[in-house]
Amino acid sequence: MKILIIEDEEELAKDIANYLSGENYLCEVAKTFAEAIDKINSFAYDCVLLDLMLPGGDGLSILEMLKKQLTLVRCLTKIHEISFPRKVFSPTKSCFSS
Image (cartoon, rainbow, N blue to C red; front, side, top):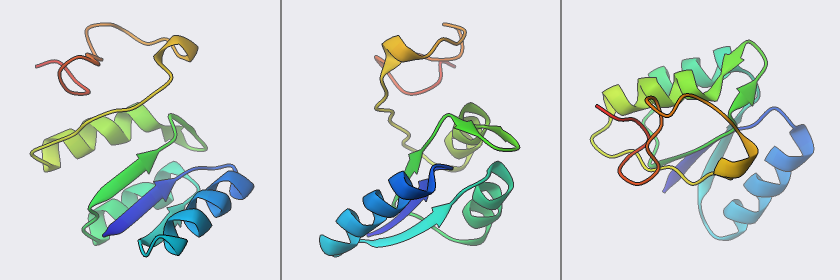
């Protein structure tokens, strides 16, 4: 399984990648919005771990793009720690309402 970790905090990204690599997952890391978009457009990933706040853009824009490209997008987040419009996010169905 190939996993893209989109995280600007270098130590956190490294820790996640090291753990998952130890579980035999192939991991790549993107530290900025632009790097994430480039990797998503260049490679096929089985899973994307996405930070919502990134240098150069926001994770919700990436999530919206992924939803258009993929048939299944599911979110796990600390919803109480972030705020964004309810009409955009629906944690009970998929990441975005239609």
